[in-house]
Structures are given as C-alpha cells and as structure tokens.
Image (cartoon, rainbow, N blue to C red):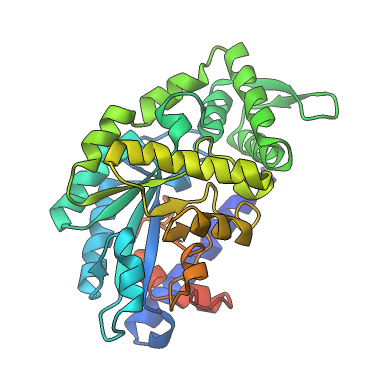
Length: 352
C-alpha cells in the first residue's frame, strides 16, 4: 500500500513540475536555458495494452503520443537531425534553430512496426541502439521477465542471499515492491549471475525468458530491413546489456567493441554512436566515455537528463538524453523537457 502511494506521489510531483515548466516556456521565461538542442530516448512505441501490473510502463509510449510530440517540437521550431550528424551540428555556426535527435534503445520490434511509420510521416531521422545478445536470442530481458512472472503469480519464494523468503503477490503494491527488490538485487550483485537466477526462477514457474525476447526484439533480418530505410540508423548497445561501469575495463571494452562489430556487419560500416545500458550515473562513468572514444565512437549517450549546450570531444562520448516517459504522455511535456526548464528548476545546467 505504502509503495503505491509513494509512486503516485512521485508521479504527481513530476507532472506538476512539467506543467510548471510548460507554463514558463509558453510565457517566454528562461529562454536561455535550452542550449543547442536535445536528444530524446525511447524504448517501446506501441498501442496501449491495459495490464493490472505494468512496472515497465514508463518505457513505452503510444504512436499517437510520438506523433503529437514531434508535431509540437516542429511547431516550436526544432530541426530534426540524425545522431550521427550531431558532432558537426554542435561544431557549426550557432545561429541555427535548436535541434532534436530521436533514439530508441534495445531494438524492440514495435520500433519497426509503429515508430517507423510516425518518423517517416514527419521525415524525422532516428537511431536504434542494438543489443546483440537480444537480437541473437542469447540473453534475456530481466525487467520484462520479472514483470511477466510477477503478474502471473500470487506467491513467490526466492533467496536474495539471506535465506529463502516468501512474498505474497495478490496486490499490485506488493508486486511492485518485490519488483523493486529484484531490481536492487540485479544492480548490487554480479549482474550475469543475478539475471541467470531470475531466468531460472521464471523457468521453474513455466515461463521461458527467451520466448519474451523472441516476441519483442528484432532479429538480424529485421534490423537489416530497418537499416535500409533512409531515416534509420543503427548504433551499438553492448552484447549483454549489463552496466558497464560495474565491469572490469577489459570486459566493458569487449562488450562495446563486439557490439560495434555486430552492427557493422549488418550495415556495412562501423556505427558512430553507442548508448550505454541503463545510462545512469552508477552504470556509466567517465571510463566508458574514454573507452568509447578509443573505440572510434563519435557519440556516446547516457540517460542522464539534460539538454546540450556545447560539447568537447570527451563530452560527446557522455551526452545526456531526455526520456519520453509513458507516464507523462502530453505533447507539451516533450516541449517543456526540450526547453531545459525542468532541469534548471532542479538545479541542473545544459550539458557542456
């Protein structure tokens, strides 16, 4: 119960902040905080599918919202550029309209089925970040496995390292609390081992994690098809989707390099951009930005929220992005985020 109240309160606070930022933008206040432009990050783009338990709902938006968000940014005067063109845009003359670049992580099939038609209708370029292990069906998506598993069960038993524990799952709040417990477990332990134990738990309960991957993620053939579209680009997103900052340097570099090799084999040339899995401060560090530059990437993106003011070569490998969140699907929120006002209200400046 307490978990549900806390989540609702947090969303209300965020909605209030976005509404305030939208009002300030419409009033012409704080015009100087937007910077040169913004990179948006998305995951799923698909029609709404009501579910009683949806802990990953923040990772999916509707095609209609994407359409409205792009139309609003057009009205605001944004230029839409590919991520590969971002370094030249930043280095070029400043007397240009602000830019917006769209990126989508993981290679979800709905990006091909639902996002591509929206981008094509507006003539907007976009980049899909490919996780090799998902595309090749050798790795699972632990957050999707958990959502499906916890949505099925009324009770679950698991050992988080302190002995077997049992959890009632007959209410959404209980399921959400257990989901958060598992997420903390994944990020606090050896990630491969933790995910392996989640996969094992799922199989014991009649759920095959790789079936979820097959149903959700584009395979090599589909990625090849998508890459031939003139508006589409593919970027690297590692092999296993583990937090790179928590891996030994040689292993992190291998994850990045092998992912680039996989994408290069699909598109015929080395990708210029990489998205770091999770992209949070504890999942990607300056070390990964250095490795990206050494491996030949010209752009590296995090999920650290922010707009872009200017960027050195090092900063280009550690850029912020703005999330189009499934809980806040209003076009004025996309406009407000791109304005830079929400981040400034939180005491953050555009990325330099």
